[in-house]
Image 1 (cartoon, rainbow, N blue to C red):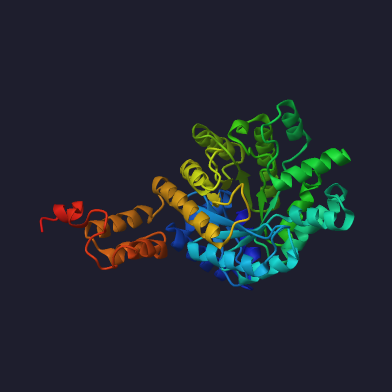
Image 2: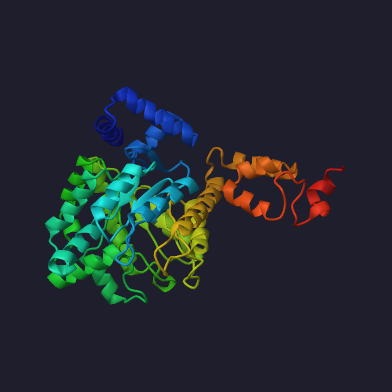
Length: 432
């Protein structure tokens, strides 16, 4: 199977181990996921699952069909707020809250310094969006993003590979066909992807095709050289409920399906990125369409957010959409924080966003038949029925948060909670 061969190459180069090491890693991941090694190998071989290589001090992570839904946390600086220590604190918060991967989306400060520090310190795989680096460099040196060259876009991908990035978002599907669809039916919010918007602007200014689409074989060679999973970015994802499922979004998804097959032929692991802002009734159909067009490749979704009206609470709107999306096939949820649409997330936003996305992922795991998901809920229910507070707190998604809330009104070993006290239904039902 081509993916197993590719993975063996990753391990040989990254961990300096051979076939025995490969088998051991697959066995370890399979055990963690509650599947057999053969089942995991089958998913990898059919490209329905991928493995992110580990960061230097971390572990490899598998994403895909039949596996636990994974959660990614975005961190990174902006031109208005550059603080490398803050980003490392965000990284720590994401890991402690249970994120499975993190993406560095920095656009302010010394981008390479920030990226290298995050990769070095991270206990989970690190992703990035190289086009941001190309844009920032062009603006800083030439005064305009439109002046960057195709070579500089590819060089940015290569640079991120050199720095140990595990997966890269590359907006290869933003081409003239998709933009023409956008022109035929203008959107309420236009292009909301930062990378997608700059590529579209570059194409229009230079009257040329997207170099990342036109020189896609070179993109694949770079990813293969540095063992990076290629995350085929949705540069034309809808940023408003009114824009969901329009011609531009579907046209780009069709293109991503073709690009996914070309990557498979070259031995490059891929995941497909998805929306965005999507009304609840469209989510199942959009998940099914993606899986159909992209040969069941792992699907990575931002949210999706199910309404546009909740700034400050978009971790909730995205958790609702994420749970539905993952229950219908999405494999990897990108968190959304309370700061979405408002500002750069702080440490507490990161923690809150990860926990909200983890709730969505676990809710979906209950419907996906993931081994251990039902057991976790059942154990919590038994502890709740027995009024076993230490066990309830231990089993909580966030023991720290649950303990803090309970401690505000009573001690951990108090028999009941202050909602019902002696009128507790469990206590009444116990015939004590």
